[in-house]
Length: 292
Image 1 (cartoon, rainbow, N blue to C red):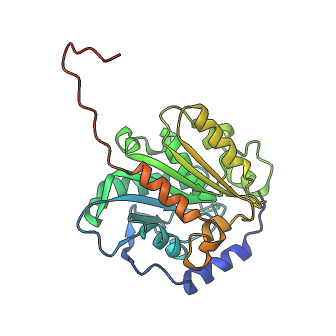
Image 2 (image 1 turned 90 degrees about the vertical axis):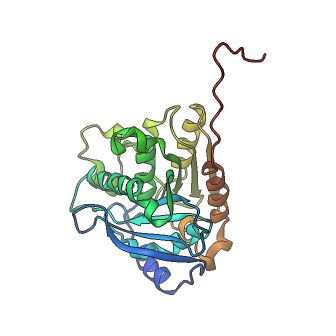
């Protein structure tokens, strides 16, 4: 993974300030604390008119090589997803070098636990949670969705009905770049840091989107994880857009750049499927014989 992030962060500043947002969405909470540390805060977005019905929830983790980023830059992404009919939560989390792996994952897990307890008060359905993210944030989302160590609560894990990764790194061991070495080089068990190594039959469905011209996080990360999920019998949608670079999968969510690729539509289709209310199977009466 390359370490040239300055122009991307500058463009995030422009996008957050200048790009028009979906008017059907409002930010209903800003700076809510999910923990006691300064960066453990989150914002909540939702459609303006919900009809009183609890909506499925998306927790969106931003990227930035685990060392940059602020939730304030990602309102455009939250608006794009919330306008599809979801409550969207965007948390901050602690960054390298102020913390080391896996503290940023523990922060993300704490945010999800907060959502599971509190989101009903903001119009969300805590039984239908989708984890999502871009770049390093996609790694965070995939790690929480696939590796039960982080949420460490079977009840919360069961409520994760799907995960979305945009330009995410999921399969990059051995570490061979300055970012991965700096962030993960001190891990006691380096291979366990890789989301792909935690796929099993219990993994949730995933949508994995990459740009074919992404030289920061190669598309093979999405392809490899998608193949591993499919081999385990888990639904995986992989979309590779040949003309997009690393940030393109994220910026394609914004109103003026949706022509780049139908990433928002991909998200819409996936979210509609995984968050659809499930009808519990009626239990068979005692002694019943299954039809042949």
